[in-house]
Length: 355
Image 1 (tube, rainbow, N blue to C red):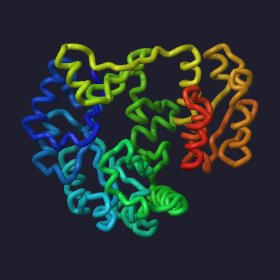
Image 2 (cartoon, rainbow, N blue to C red):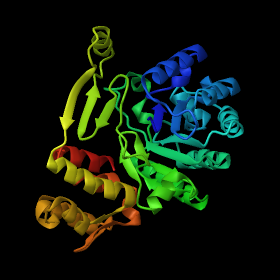
Image 3 (cartoon, rainbow, N blue to C red):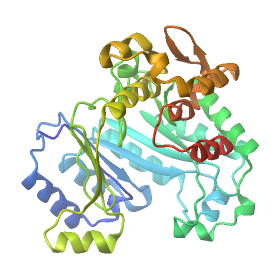
Image 4 (cartoon, rainbow, N blue to C red):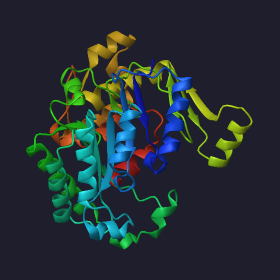
């Protein structure tokens, strides 16, 4: 049975109603979707491409969670990124979701966009808080014009500097905290009664390629260009080239282009990173018991970096384990990178400069 379904990878609501019906009919023909509304079935929505009829269709098709892309409500920023979207458009979709009894509403914001200021972004955050979404994702804009063609139209001189971005993040964390939201980690916030916040409190929260989840025990099947799947200890990824992807499917071949079967070392490091990224703490004894290792000896190469992070006030390091301090929780990704064997020293240095 499919416990969790997420339709994203862009903006599915660009599809017509007939196309959405056909897509869901195909999924139901090949997978056992739950029909009693007990699954977590979510979809990404562009409020500019949706209305009440769209929301009604999505609810009819079985979706009970929505994620709305907003980015920023400041018209100056919207013009700079060529995405004009009013607060009223967003409010209308949130109200439709509540009326139609969608279980959860998430809103995505981005800081670090061109012409953005800390003061104006604070106003956006206040206006979004008024909508009371169950969850918020507040992402740091990554300017990679060499990879994403639309970003080539952005004037880099209009991007805020690192100090301004840090101020935006600090104010956002303060505003959301004052409004009752809990920081889940990795740019995500949720109300205290949201299942992610409850799972974090119960130490059952997990994370996979889809983000934080309460369904980490499930296999993950990714469909589409560049989609990643995890089945047991096997990870695989589809071709990221659209033409190649279509050619493989047209010739009745799997679109998979690469894969990885987890080694013992991968499993150990995954367990360490899961504890840190989901619960901001790590119990050495638990890892040692589960994998029959001596933690300090196994990760001796990581110790100097951990000591440096402790000196910087990001973590508390003891004989029993690691606790990520409040100052380090916003940088938990950097703490986890210490244990990622696939990252080179150059990757780590580049990330540090970004922070």
